[in-house]
Each structure stands twice: as C-alpha cells, then as structure tokens.
Length: 582
Image (cartoon, rainbow, N blue to C red):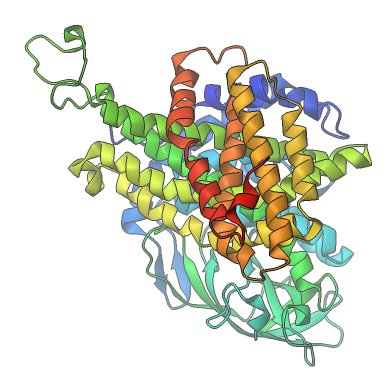
C-alpha cells in the first residue's frame, strides 16, 4: 500500500490520443510530422518505466535523508546522482529540444507528460532538471553564438543542469528591487563578459552533485542602470569556467524547508563571478520570462502529478481498508463473517476520490492542449494559427499554474483524509505529498500574482477580446443538442458577459480588478474544466465507470462552485445587477 507512484500511460493516452487527437494536430507542424501515435506511445511507455522503476523508489529516502551541506558543497540523497546520470544519458531532457542542438525534436507535449509523472513520483528529484528546457529556450533565443556553442548542447542534453537566480533577500515577487551588480570587463572568453556580485536566495539546485557543472542564469544590474525592472540584465555564470577553474559562485547554506527535502534550496553568493550577457542590456526580464513561462506550465503539471500521486495512495488504501458498514452496501461485497466494508464503498470516501480525479483528468486535458499549443506556436506554418496558439498559452498558463497547484495541496489533504490517522504518519507516504505540494502555490509567481497577471495584464487591457476569442473557439467544439454541452455553452456565455462587465467597471474603480482577481481566475478554471469534461464525455470509450464517475463528481460537486465565484465577483461591482445577462 505504501509503494511508490506508478504512471498509468493508458489514462494519459486516452486524453492525448482519443480526446485531443494529438497526432493529427502535430501532423500539420513543420518538423514534427513523424510524431505519430505509435512513436508517442512508445516514448510514453518507456518514460513510464523509467519513472516508475528508477525515480519513484527514491522519493521516500530523499525526503527522510534530504540534502546535506558542508563547506559549500551539497550532497544529494543516496541514489539521486545515479538516477540523474541515467536520466540524461538516456536522452530524456532532450526530448523537445531541436535536433541541431543535440535534442530529439519531439513535441513539447511529450515532455509535459514526462514531467507530470516525474513530479508525481519524486518531486524533490525532479526539481533539478525542471528548469532545463526553459534555460535551453532562453539561451537559444537570446545567447551570443559563441556562448551557445559552448553551453547550449550541454543544457539541451541535460549533461549540465541549470538554475534561475532571481530572488534576493529583499526582492521576491518585486524583481525591480534586485541589487546584484554586474561590472563590464574588457576582453574575456566570450563577448559581454562581466563580474557579478550579490546574494540570491531560494535557488533550487544552486549547488549539488548531480551533474558535473551547473549553469546559473542570473539577473543583475549594470552600473548606471535605471531603477526598477528596466534596469535588469541577464547573465550566464557557470559553476566551473571553460578552463576548468571554479567560478565565484558560492553556496553559503541550504534552507530547512517544510517539504522538498530532496531538492537543495540554496543561498548563493556571487563574488566577482564571471558571467556573460544573455540578450540585450536592460532586457534581462524579457529573456528570463522565456524561462518563467516554461516553468509555469511545468509547475501546473507538478500540481496535476502530485494530486494524482495522492489520489493513487488514497484509492489503493480505500480498496484495502475495511471500516464499518457502508450505507447500501451489498452483503456480497464483504468477506464471510466480516462486519465491515471497504472504504471505497462509503459515499464520503467515494466523493473525495472522484472529486480529485475530476480535477486530475480535466487538468491533464487542458495542460496537454496547452502543450500542443506550445508546439503549434513554434512550428505551425500558418501565422494565424500560431497567433491563436500563443493566445491560448498566454491566457491559460496562469490559470493552470494557480488552480491546479491550489488543488494539489488542498486535494492531497483531502486524499490524506481517506487514510485517517494512518495518513498523518510517515509510514504511508501521503503526508510527504501534502508537504511537497505546498511550495508549488508560491514559486514561479505566487498564485495571487497569477490571478493579477490573468485579469489585469491579459484580459482587461483589450476589454476581454482575447479571452473572448478563446471562449468562442471552445464554443465551436460543443453541440447544444447534448445536455451537458448546453450547460457548458451557458457557462461560457456567463463568463464572457461578466468579463465585459468587469472591463467596463474597471475603468471607474482602480481597485476592483485586484479585489476580484482570485475569484475570476477560479471562475475561468471551472469554465475550462467544464469544457474539458464535455470533450471527454463525447469521446468513444468514455462510457466506462473510469470516466463517468469523475464526470458525475465534476457536475455535482465541482461545477456548482462557479455560481459562488460569480456571485462573489458581482457583489464587488458598483451595480451588481449589471453582471446578469438580459
């Protein structure tokens, strides 16, 4: 019962191949035409084996032993380095990187499924390679040719791991306060050489023994640069310099954390460290946000994976543990002389499990559609299609990150409840998932920042037009003749009307949007979930109890929350009645 997480490729494949028809979408994309269902299935099957057999068994000892810091050096838990070396040598980090950079040129959506499973299996270990693809994209698009020649291939392959050094003791979400200094140097091995000095905190994988080098991407300020975010530039500063000498990047300590004990969260001191400019001076955030956006999709997948890991443990326990008589249970369901029924037969436990699975399945479908949109935004030959894909990613990414990391923590806590007192002790492994999941609501932009980003920066500036286009595209896939589709169509219309109302009211009240942003993001998430479940419900094969039970839970237990969120928003409007469609 306390065994480690195991991927279930059949569930993921149903959503990816049957519902989304991923291969037919990818067939139109330049460079991805060979990614047919057979190839994708083979990749996922092998990925599932690696995750289940190599990575998952290390999770518990990674949590209990944790990382050790001594004299600036970090030792990861037993087995972590061997697993990582096997991981990169097997080519897993390079799945979605371009072939000319040493990658495999496969769709990003496959990488998404892989990292969902990795996070579910061993969140602490997965933190190490989690930033690789973002670092790859950042360097590929903004790095100088000489710098790329030295580092891009090794980042793409995963031979060298990477970090994202943003946060400072006084500068968390407000990066405009960053003080780390970068002083230009004449000459140097690569163009744009500087000396970096400053302290960064909360740096995942800032120091470790998993890879032979670590490539730090560091936000810093040039002499005379303007205050605020426009004065920030981005630099690449490796742990070991090209001549093999140690750079001036020092780990002063690792944090003692609530969870993620298998991941070293480092305080990094840069002391005249050599770094090279990535991108243009003063455009550091522009370059860094390529990493941030990729990381936010990964964090959303972390949430989905962690919730699935908690669900697996709770479901397995509920199918073994007998407690009391279940209301309406058939005598045949009990063993001879046994006066207790399985927990799975108790409605209260069934409700918890089905509700969490409703979130997992809908989250997967939306995340995989976002993965396909990332592929389309990069590779589609038609500019209009690329723009539509980018619009989807821009609007849906903050929703996925915030809503599914929130559910990862609170839903995992619900799953712990199924185990009762056994869930609260370490033996069964589910309390680790609850602790590990909590940080996902904080890093890569807190969930409150995601809500503000969605409403104030992406929805309201154009009066809700971009979101309206996304909602119209979803409407086109629904059939009003089907009962559930008709309900979803009504919900889409409600959200569009409310968005228009908010856009009008926001011009009169500068605080309104910030007050309702969290409720608005949650409302968007619920409407997107409704669309996702409508797509699942109309797919051949979804008639089985596997899909019907969470669909029923979504309609009866999850979707009604939308009325609450809409009402909470309407109560903040100057004229609440204005938010009701005529």
